[in-house]
Each structure stands twice: as structure tokens, then as C-alpha cells.
Image 1 (cartoon, each protein chain N blue to C red):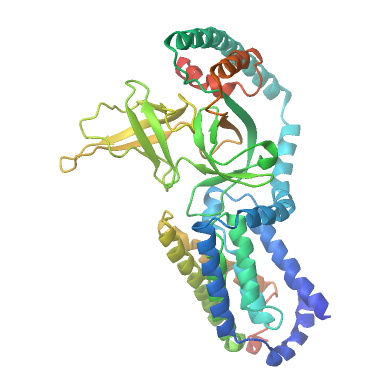
Image 2: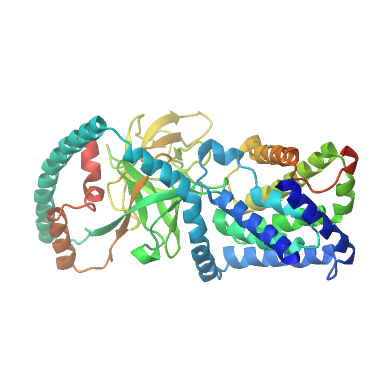
Length: 159
Length: 321
């Protein structure tokens, strides 16, 4: 049974990687949510015994590879975000849906800020406020997943 | 189905109390340091090229899988393309090929003449070039830079530094090569500079990518410079990377302010930086080939008019049209 759960974690991560590898371009690229990070946050909150900060780092490495940037950028951003997710995991499970959404948004935002800082140091070009759209879309995805019954197993008061 | 999954996963919450191993903070510290070390090793020391290439090869099947839906859509579109459309396209292509054949004949004579003149003057500058046709797989996923990934790599003798052109002009330069794919930085990326020449008067300059709004900058030119709107920029070829005379951009805007000694010149790239599927990778083959070798290649090139040819003949076409 544990095997099965590990399987579901890794299968979903591979699926998210394929989503990331889809030929996004133009407008779709600017609004594309960070699938990998969303999923890793999801599993960190839902099954903290199956994945931890190290998993996030490893996943980040693959995102670095897929985006073709310098190795370690996404890995660092994911590591720090995962740390926050793990630290407040027990509290997060007790949050109601709105609080949870806000918290997830904050996590996505943190990762984007970290990436922004790294990229600015590396001399990348800045793209203005539209840079933060993916966080909003990510939260929207989280909300939709919640509506379809795929939640982190918290907010029992709703039931 | 998700409900069942939920139930299954609910049970694993219990052992969360017994999570063992180092604390989250320790993990954070360890992996952060590791990431920073990786960044340093990758960007400053370039140690990780082989690691990247290996992992990229592992990722390749997934990439193919991810590209499959759009590929299928395109193939289906091609399959159902109408008879009329194909006929008209065929006609158009035939006309185009006749036009090109005439220019090609002229070019052949000119190339021979040029070689003879060069021999008379005893200069050896002409450099033969090899081309590889490639297809864009996807645009770069990094929103901070302007890159594309093409479906040719080490296996097809692509090497870093080669120029990438399409039918209308230069679009970028190969910056990273993987076994089966390679990464091209577009000329509109801020990190890429390209030596150009104004076609009208031969003035040399360097064009820099502007980033966001796919345009090129022409800095360091004095405000009294002889440049006009609509001037065509072509590669000057003095860098030994881009072949001479390929179209790069057209001057679209010139701003001269009295408080700056330099003019602000903005150009629009002629190549379809954002919207083409097929590209050519042009490499300047061995700059130090002997004169006889390079000249024989130059003569031979127009004779076998194959797919490689347009790269050589492109700029003349463009001006003649």
C-alpha cells in the first residue's frame, strides 16, 4: 500500500513534468502556472511522510533542466518554499478552504519572489507585473482541484 | 475515483508523527547550500555540461510525449488540407523557384568572378558555410530570456556558436547543444549582441537584443550618424560567427535627444523571431581552409541546388523582391 502511494506521488510528478514540457508559447507561457510546485506543495501538505524538502529540491532540479536555465535556481526556490510548507503543515490541515487558498498563494508568491531575486542577480530581463499571474492561476487550479474532491485532507469542519 | 484515492491516502496521515531523519530546517540549510553550489558550478565553472546533456537525453522521451498532441493536430491539419490550397501553394512555389533559379545563375557567375578577383588581389576572406535544416520544437520556458529549442543536436553536427536563420533573416545563435536538441538564444534576448552593417552606406554597428518587446537596440552611435528609418541592417561578418550579408533588422525608430551624445535607435528584426517553424543552422566551416578548398566549395555550392542553398542566396533575394 505504501508502494502504491509512492507510486501516485511519482506518477503525478511525471504528469506535471509533461504538462510543463508542453509547447507553451506567447500568452499561454505568461499565464502558465507552476504545476510542479503546486503538486509538490500538495503532497507536502497531504503526505509529509512521503516527500520532504529534499523531494522539492530534486523536483526543482528537473524544472531547471526543462527551462534550460542555470542549475539550482528552481531547486533553491522550491527548497525554501517547501520548507515553509512543511513548517506550517500541521496548522494548514486545520485551515478552512479560503485560508488554505491564501496560504497556497503565499507559498507560490514566495517561490516567484526568490526566482525573481536570483534572475535579477543573473542579469535576466524583467517582465513587469504580469510575472505574478502564474501564482493567481495556480491558486485557481488549487481551488478547482478542491471542488473536484482532490484536497489535502484538511478542513473537516466543511463536511 | 478521486474520493477513493482520498480514502486510501487518508490512512497514511498517521505515521506523520514518526517522521524521522533530519529536521526541516537542517534539510533547508543543506539543500539551499547545495543549490547555491550548483548555481556557482554551472554558471561560473561550466562543470555540469555533461550532466545536463545526460539528463536532457533522459527527458527527451517525455518531451516527445508532450509535443505529441500539437504534432498530431498539425499532421491532421496537413492531411485534411484542401486540394485547391495545395494546388495554389504548388503554383506559388514553382514561381518562386523560377525566380530563385535566375538569381542563382547570376550568383554562380558572380561567385566565380569574385573568386578570380580575389585571386588577383591575393586576398582570402571568403568563407564557405555549411547549413543544417532544423525545426523549432518549442519556445523556451524561461520567461526571463528569449530562447527556442530546435530538433537538431550533437548527433547532427551542430555546435554551440552557430548562427540560426530563417527565410527572412537571422533569428539567433546556438548557445547550448544537447545530443538530440539544441537551444538557440534569439537576437532579441538581452544577452545577445550581433555585429551589423547598414546596407545603404556600410556603417558598422553592434545590435543588442532589447528583451521584452522583441526589438533590437543600436547603441553607441553618435546623434549625427547617417541613419534613416527603413534602413536595412545586415550581418557584417567580422565576428566570424554570422556569415556576411544576412538580413537582421530594419530601423524602425530614431530618437535624438539634445541632452545625449548618442542616438537612440530601435530596429525590428526581419526574421520571424516569434512565428516560424523551420530554420537553418549556418556554420562557418573552418575559417582557415586553404584558398583552393574554399573556392572549390563555393563553386560547387550553387551547382547542387539543394535545401542548403537559400542561406547563401537569401539576402540578394530579399533585396530583389
